[in-house]
Amino acid sequence: MTAGDLERELEALHQASFGWALACCRRDREEAADVLQSVYLKVLEGKAKFDGRSSLKTWLFATIRRTAAEGRRRRWVRALALGRWAARRPDPPPAGDAEASMSEGETLRALRDALDGLPARQRDLLHLVFYEDLTIAEASEVLRISEGSARTHYARGKERLRQRLGARGRP
Image 1: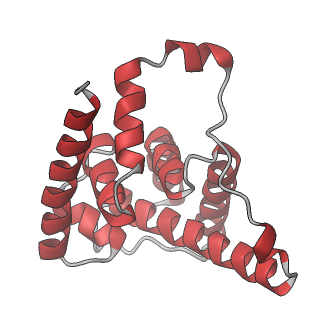
Image 2: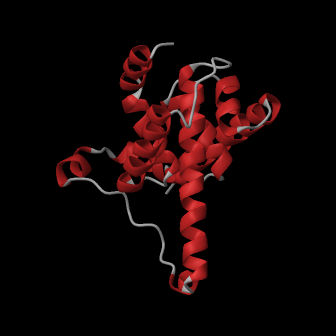
């Protein structure tokens, strides 16, 4: 794949890549933008190379996931080293403008809350399959788990999501 082809493919995947980066960064838009910028820089500098063993999207999403995890580890070590671990605050709410918040429907908010309540692996797997249109096999590659484990997490995640959403509808 030539550099020009790679750039066009990355541009075509940008919106989906940002969505996945948001999921990997607990919906922190600033952190997600930083992660995505770091990934693009790794690709352009040749530090991350696509070898063609999977689809470009699968490879890119795995690179985004690893880069987000590296950033979390770096921040955690820094906070621990400086003694700030005791002052940790919960993650900030997702940033967004008032118009976007107002237009977001109650059903979408309920779905997001239900997804946020799932274990991380189930939440990540459902995000990749439903929002990013990856197959379970591709999502298992991104998350670096076996396909059988991915299928189990997928089934359990859907069931938990169904239960959580069903519980919200009851008085």
